[in-house]
Image (cartoon, rainbow, N blue to C red; front, side, top):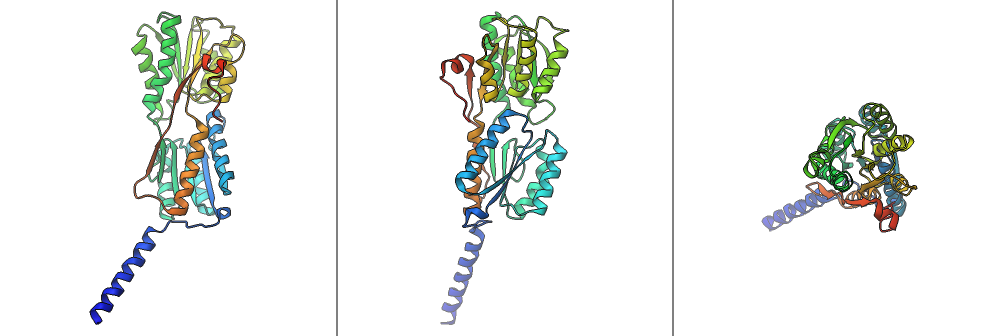
Length: 323
């Protein structure tokens, strides 16, 4: 009898321990009590505005509270803002697209220990429960490939190219490498006259403004983001660089870029859609599920969908903005 009671007690304790261990960090039944913090590297980049629109839509649908921080491309500001928010307020989850993932590593470590669900968007932050990622080299190659095929058809692979990148962010440098690889693979005769970081429209404008006096015969701008590409387009358009020997290609397929493709005689020839709305929406939905049901033992990994978008697809209505 004593042995039977002992076995029952041990079994009961084990069951209780399993229940405690498997319970979600935040078993919040009322959605109104759920709070998620989202940190964008820069809302000046229209792609991140697309992500934010997806985040906001998911939060509204779920009936939860969400707050967005703009790091303004400043890694120290992003680290400082996230640290202070998580120390001073109660959040159930934090989602960030990092300016510098390693800067956020200790913050995410702290968050996980506090039972806060953590998520990475684009660049992977250590200690993330959700990782929404992409192969930067492959994505850059896709951007460059569309530009290279245009140059092959319209320039016979002979011309001058400026590549606008995000090389100031070591994690995203591979994207620019992918662009260059594609250009050289399809059109080895193309001359890449410049490669500079330009993660916003103003930077793209500034760089092109400096380059054109040195390379008035520049044919092509290829940017790893729409924001940089838009800056390049504005300056080329202002310098009356029109016709079938000029082009701008980029990545993100934001509404801003698609509108420019529709201008009369536009030389904005293409972009690559990363569906920012879907990325933001699905990230929040996944993290909300983790808040209610617990994070998985291994990080949940999702991969960005992306597809080439040509000017022809936009003009014909085959492709429309995804947010």
